[in-house]
Amino acid sequence: MDLDDTDYFHSRWGATALGLAYLLVGIGLLASFTIDSTEFFIGVLLAILAVTAVSLYIIIRSEGVVTRENTVIGGFVLLSLGLLFGLYGYTELPPELVFAIVIVVGILLPNLFLRHTRLGTE
Image (cartoon, rainbow, N blue to C red):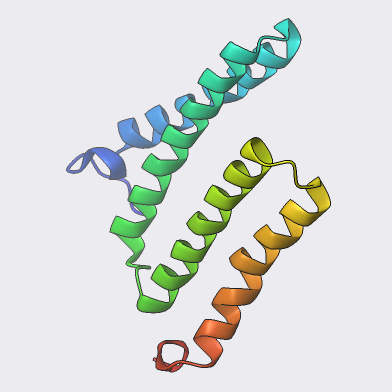
């Protein structure tokens, strides 16, 4: 990636700010474990989500990785994450069964879907 000052996310300042954000999130994660605070941990997890979303935005804008296949895979992954939190938090299912469901929905179903449709051959 050639860094210049014309675009914030591709400039030296943008790369430095993103690097510092990752560093601060890491320090916050360590601090949340050290002080054993659930509320602080949840706040750090939200910060991790935000920094990751910014990173994904930068990658998608600069690399052009949005294809139909990646969109299908991403949709199944988001569905499986929703199932993970929903099933694990709001049901009495054993954790082994919850993770088995998440693996089937997040890995096996998109693979089968792409293999048996035209999306996987484009």
